View 1 (tube, rainbow, N blue to C red):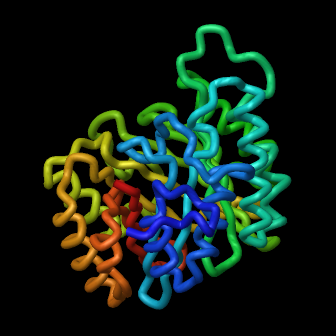
View 2: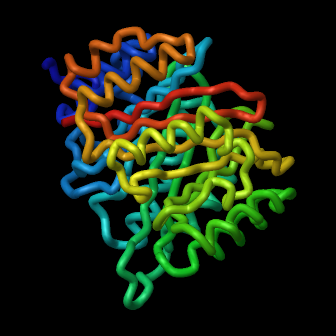
Length: 328
């Protein structure tokens, strides 16, 4: 597979970037620039060493394909600080990637809220004594459309829901719905992280992510959209196929200004399931949606692996299927 040295993109992920360009129908140079933004690369196109938490094979770059009946959204998600341990370097590199992503994706409205969010995950001071988790920062951009994102896990595993509730209260004038969900998650599940996404003024969304730690009824989350037959059916299918409840990550998106629930999704880790099974699931889910994935052969042709497959629904009842891909 051809590398992308002329695009100043890391050759190690060149096939994934070619696939991203195929799916988004943009020039490969655009995908290369996006990758450099979300990875925080400036003076070098060499992929930093280290193992990222973004993908289960340690790769710090991910391609997200989100398909609805009438459109597809293509995003790149990167981990710009996976190779760093110094808190100051992690914060500065994360902020640099966030600013580059906001500029690339024409999302100036995101920057201020995202930078204040970043400070919750990556301290600018000395590391907390005894901390066993440095926190993670993932930065995303859309290809061929405005929109950027920041997702993070705080540098603590105890009290994460309290940190997230403080964040919601500080960033939104209408935090009650998100705070209520966080309170329920705190008693039944593990909070994976939270984040903010969007581009244009009025489009920003707060995101909350959580994982089951055992068998929990979807009713316990108090989110009616998760009880939609298609969403509940997807969860049942994943569990019936042998995946544990811990393989599922749930998320809810709330309007930053109004606090209204905008959509929910559930993603299933594909670590212990086969590539061909994943492609077959995509085919069946797309057929049910009445959608199609153009250039689907790019997944196999560019040696991509499947990190997760997910289902989502918005407040208007619009359904989508998500595929998260990584470079093998």
